[in-house]
Amino acid sequence: MELRRLDLVLVTPLATATGTHRNRPVVLVRVETDDGGGDGECAALEKPKYTVEYADGAETVLAERLIPLLFGRAGRAAELGTAREARARLDVVPGNAMAKAALEMALLDAELRSRGRSLAAQIGVTRPRIPAGATVGLGAVSSVVAAARAAVEAGYKRVKLKIAPGRDVGPLVAVRRELPDATIVADANGSYDLSNPAHRAALLAIDSLGLAAIEQPLAARDLAGSARLVAELATPVILDESIDSPDTLEAALAVGACSGVAVKPARLGGIAAAVRVHDRCVGAGVHLSIGGMLEAGLGRAAAIAVGALDGFDLPGDLGASDRYFRPDITGPHELVDGELRVPTGPGLGVEIDREVVAAAAVRCRVFRPS
Ligand code: MG
Image (cartoon, rainbow, N blue to C red):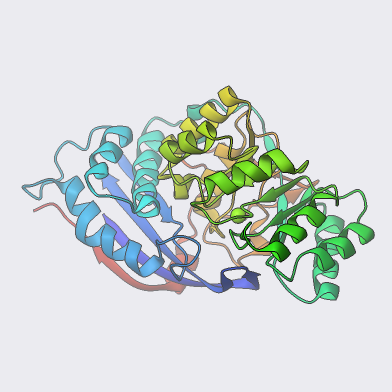
């Protein structure tokens, strides 16, 4: 196995309620098995803000715990089994969903490539394309309006506006006035507190704007508060940070804490977990939206395939490569009539551009069986 660290820079910095993303460190996992090779991308961000995981930590956990676990006690690359079996072995390590998801992705890529099968076909996707979404960060009202308008003019089917207390109703009203027919979602990244009267008043004002959804208004652990909002607001309440595993989804469903879920395979611990969450949400009659983690081309390919499952009824976060990286680490995901093509090649369905990876790599560690 190879663990390669890349330091990418976002085309446009993204300001959210929990901080501004400028750099996009990427940890790539490459696995070579008897059947062939595969690649996975770790979605952990630069700093432990969106969730507790972060790129440096994920890289360390992969190197010191997860990869040695797969090599086994004797340090031999013995029977890995299927990607699913290998992934299950990682559960003795608590947390670290994104690091585990990267390994699962690499193993699954190798397994599917050896069978000439695409991830989309493997999980039962039939849609050839998904609607693309654009995310606009916090900023001055005029620049938020301009960015939202540019996204709609480029063909994006949905615009997500990042909001935070005090930076919410003003820009949302301005964007709504400028783009009366656009599908708009507001994402608060957990920054509101129902015990604060000003926050509460803002949420009620936002509810009158005809948004497609409000995402993660309250702190990730405040499922009771979120349930109150589901009951009070006409706007669907989507949970993102709150849902970090199929188990937390059960806890949220039990108290009616969400009208929908933003599914991010990496945050849930991998593709198999994401498919389970999708299936459970369909059974529970909960909306589904595919989320983005500012992934580079490989992680985005996997997310697009998952987001093409039939239950996804709300447009998601995923956009074209050139919105985020120029160049991307794979062939680009391009916008076609406001949609993204579901990759259909073997494995994750895209090929890594080794030149781009080599240019962005800052270190590489190789792990071999003894
Ligand atoms: Mg979100």
